[in-house]
Length: 479
Picture (tube, rainbow, N blue to C red):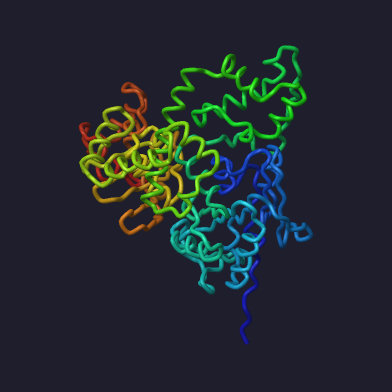
């Protein structure tokens, strides 16, 4: 009589000293920040909890093996990080997803392993997944599959943060605020999210602007982020507590900020950027038919009134972006302009190739195009290489293993088919040669000399900039 093999789920838990990818994305998108409550459902050895706590985030967690006696609490953000893919029982897997959703007051972040992420050679099929040599179970999802699983469990369409990583919101207003922030393209830093972080005390000073310096800084940061001055209710309690302790009104603090702290030129640029951000956001909301698009947050309503006067005027102007996307010649012209500005380059098929860190500098119509891909597959990272192919309605993201290397390895690609609304993850085993052209390195750099030697060695020709293969070779041929 055969017995089912023993599955050691806890062996998949990793020792972390920095944030996991799902929590790093949550921090970068400002879903998680100081003052946010986080619960890690299936926290493993607690690496995320330590990193979050070190940065002032109230973080707690539970794990059936490492922290079975911890209580399960409701929190604003709940993380279900790479948990579903290690549970071999489908009913238990569904129960874990539903339980995590039930304790999330604002949003649930779900992440799993995807098909194509690792080779399956040597793994033993078991149930709807595989058994590893370490006695662990792994189910590898399709990107669209986990999206559907999450959507069915929470009753709403989740938003992709990255391939295999989604966030589901309870309130449409919170989803809209998140989508707008993401489309702004300005990310928060995760550098302070590490264990052992120490905090320096802030000493009070006699002058007004010195005594309320933290409040002035927060006000200026808000103004430069949204292109307008804040309302009192939009500032954190720490700002109001400081002003109350110093007996300074909020209006006086704002006036002091405008007079002494706020950079006028930067503020005017922020106004222009915020207008464009809203146009791109609303165009994408209409194009993707986002259900929450009709429910802007109170802060977004203030943004719209400040920059457009009314939501109707914003909607009319956003249609111009959609018309540009519908007409290929407009998109092609925008790509050529981008290449002329030195942000990216065109290959022989007139596809735009650009460093992922420059996506936010694209024109509005192209940001709409990349935004459609982000809606399906999640964000483009700074170290990625992106290829836009609007004529074929495709976008491909190439992941680089070591961007600082003279010839970085391309480890995987994420192909987004906008016509089919499909995402395909593929493992790659190639080496990028023409790095300098894509990343805009100086014409006399040492990198360009190395590339010329490599191209000559393999007969690629000095006149070619980028070809269909992105000027790549198998790693074995790049030495």
